[in-house]
Length: 140
Ligand SMILES: [Zn+2]
Ligand SMILES: [Zn+2]
Image (cartoon, helix red, strand yellow):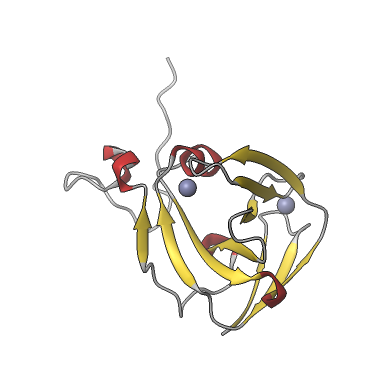
């Protein structure tokens, strides 16, 4: 596959070529906090398959396996752009949501399922709209 991607504001863009090693959904606490939602979905590529452009911010932390994880993001709009782990230093994981098209990809592995939040699955009672409904909070 050949894909392009970008952050929300467009200051960071990338090109990626070739097949990912794996597509994983992760429910760990770090992914929950960095995404602001229940999980991340990332495709791991060899670093030489990826060409990143634009200035990046970084946050570095220790993983549960004592490796060092780097999360890179756009400093202008905050979008997550990639993750790296010293366990696999020649690789980087790109969020599927940043890709212009990820049609060819599907989740193969789910990790940290024990940390999955109950609200990260739709209840049958959820009201579902195809676009933003015409609704506003009532003013008091
Ligand atoms: Zn941005
Ligand atoms: Zn995670």
